[in-house]
Amino acid sequence: MKKPRTDTAGILVNNRINEIKSIVQSTNTPFRFGHVGTKDNPADCATRGINKDELRHHIWWNGPPIIHQLDTNISQFFTLPANCDSYDVSNTMATLTSTVDDLLDWNRQSDLKKTQRTVAYVLRFFKKIISRIRENLRNRILHNIPELQSESPQQFISAIEYENALNLIVRNHQKMYCGSHVQKMHGCLRLYADDRNVIRCKGRLGKADIPQEAREPIFISSKTKLAELIVRDAHLSYHCSTCQTMANVRQRFWMSRLRNLSKKVIKRCVACQKMNNLPYRYPDMEDLPETRVQRTKPFQH
Image (cartoon, rainbow, N blue to C red; front, side):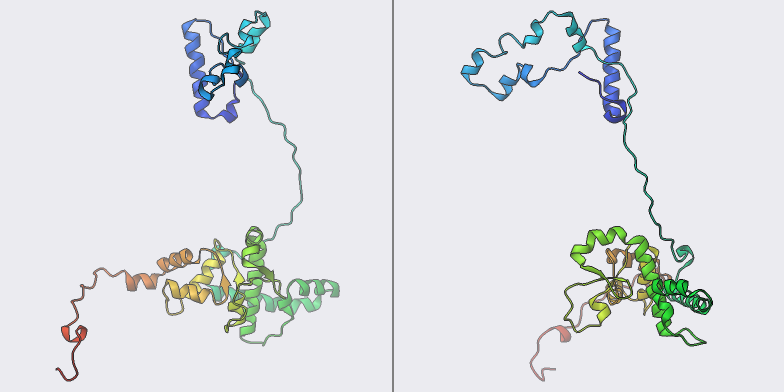
């Protein structure tokens, strides 16, 4: 019998082994610990059953042959090994992986529209400086950031710039957080990348009379700050309820556990809490009058 390793046996097994050893040492009685295999265990025939022909020459009558051996080396079979440290030898492999840095510090972002405006101004700045760099470097930047190729007015941020900023934010978000999600949900959601390299979900609404963004929504990881800002922006439109907030989000985006996230955002909305969590409840309404709930003949009243 071999003693299990202390690092893999667990606390319960190690405590029982130490307790057995302490009891054996305190009694000063010779003990032998060993393991009897299935083929040498006479009790198996009583528990598992055996026919009469096999029972005639079974070890049930005289025991296994090992107990009749008088060799002195048999004592080594019953020796319980002492504690010894064992180590696992494993092969390790070092690989180089490319990491994607986050575009924004999301701990400082609390509004989606403001975040889009900030990114739009950054894109404007890049448009001015890429004309002064080398052509090969400029082409690589334009290939990675196609939003820089669109024209923009000189004064205010346009709707196109807001949309380009959102595409850039979403694309960076998907590179950071959606790697494992895309592999797990590729089959059920039919994910694909559009012409701007934004991952979308292709469901069964391809023939529906709804906008293209609702038929193929953008895939967003749920447990992220961007998902929370998207749900918050959808809720702030008239401070919608949970179902209406989910409907607003699904017009453009798809994320898992949307209902839980919507409830979480609404619970943190200060305006909604002030309106809904009143100090006193309204009294229960009385029953409607008989004239409104009972059938009557014409001109009865």
